[in-house]
Image (cartoon, rainbow, N blue to C red; front, side, top):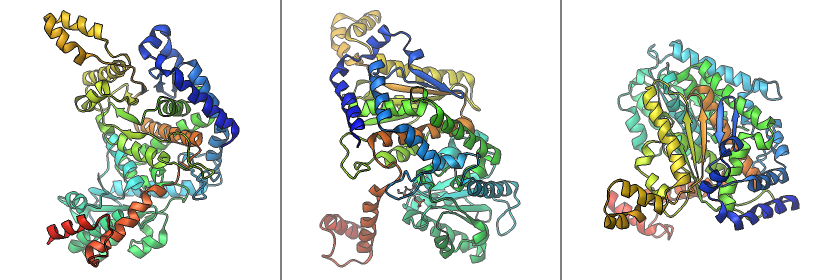
Length: 536
Ligand SMILES: O=P(O)(O)OC[C@H]1O[C@](O)(CO)[C@@H](O)[C@@H]1O
């Protein structure tokens, strides 16, 4: 880490001494124009970060950190296609997937995109169909992690825009996932998309083999050609698996799994929504890309979102960040963001090989509002921990009642206020008095009904949940994650942390099926014996 950056971190962390005086209620009283000062907009999307425990001093210090980390060069390096994935020695150039501008990779990107969109349109039109001549009614995307979460989240979020076959998503190695999905599907009208960058992922290969068995049992081996598509960068493995070469859609090595929904990995999205909607999805992301690349840091939404996260994590010390889309169709958004953020920034080694000295990526979790309000919001309001949260909401509903949407909006905004402001003991006593409670009841209940408040949140408001704005939202979070990785000096684009468990699972499975007694790992021998006894 450069001495500049070290100093910037020291300056920032020195501010932690004064954080007790940062009380949102008082800060709003002193600065009634906080919304004007601490909100940004771009292309219809509004980012309100006024309900963070920040002031001009903290913002200056955070911006100083961004500058000292050479973030300006880092963002240009990403767009140039430099080797920013420095452990795996490649670029992370997902921004090129949503750009039509000429570059060294644009020809390849546009060719892949066109092939994928043409195929999607042919499927939608019924021109490409099953082995018995029937059009596909159902598409099953088999993949996991980035080969599943993006397509699944996006197709669910944009369901009002569906006009193609139904889409299903199978990911889990648990055989019940594919079994339950295939129930009720007709082999003659089902198309399987086997999505795996590596084409070696155990879950995906196992589920793909199960799907093939199910299909060929009724339509014979020759049907595989018409009912299986592969999306991968590993062409030899796909061919070995037996998928016809005319049904293989590739993408580039520099597309990371969790950044791949913009590539051929989005085929299920394109089949469900059509090429024009898919292009609008890319265009929304591109708009955010340009904003991220060009706007000054203080006016830059991904940069400021990242800096709020760093403030909450490294100065205020909060372990987690919650994501609450007030949108039932965005119910898989937090799960998607979990992989994006936690697989990217759940790291502890910096670019120079040393152990990082600050806390890195937070625990990401969330559920849609208003449901969450009736489950875990109690804990947020009155529990002993503090969790900063992002609230996301569309100004206008899509295929839903305007009045109900007004209630949804009101709930979303009210929660951000309740978290920030809380309710004091005296206010609680007044409320109980107004309810006509007697003195003894007031004394007994008041402490239980106090809300400490001072819980930070961001609010992200967008016009409507369209393909364009969903693309913009995802790109916003992608860039936030990258900015934070740059500040922490970690590589946001590898995922070595998932490997050890995979290796041990293979050894454990071998032991479970045909291992010699006594040769088991001491850590699992006891439970393995219990499993074997129960399986007899
Ligand atoms: O697309 P693949 O190669 O099957 O990988 C699936 C997922 O597995 C991981 O490599 C590890 O969980 C993810 O990064 C990736 O999205």
